[in-house]
Image 1 (cartoon, rainbow, N blue to C red):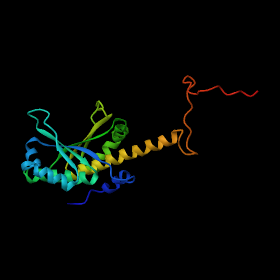
Image 2: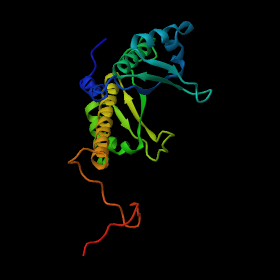
Image 3: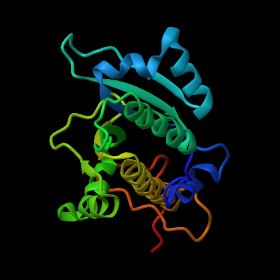
Image 4: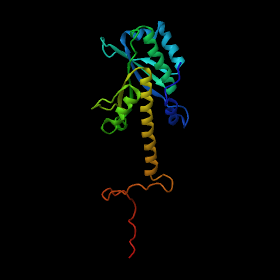
Length: 219
């Protein structure tokens, strides 16, 4: 198995710095006719793949009887994602679902907090364009998405294995940076932060949040 693309180990650092690497969920879309090859006889292949990668791998039910694609749900830390997705790409090539000279390109979806989607896109689409140029993957944040119950939206990544992996890691980097900024902001803006941190903004007069008798004015 080749080593992870550049940035993979570094991307895991923010997740692993406080304990175990963070679990990630990625949706990989494969040709519907390839489901049997991924599952294997009596489910043997998907079980072996799950053990090898250290990831949970499940095939979602078809959205419609004539669906051309099926969604594979891969859950695990960054290294497990790399192994599992690599084997899925490899199996599709091995089983000739793509031509001899045809590169295996799949669509993958990752979910990001709706509030962080703008950071992935960047001002005027700058960040997403840089991602595409750097990784050679197509990265799309569909417009006018309705956030799910967890207030998350989908980022689509389309490309060959290494392009997709690099794009996924770069997007996770951006999300980790957003998380760090939010945590810093919470500590600095809250009343329970360390001394020397920024004080919270004053309450608007109309809120009347103070309780108890008003302070005595000195003449």
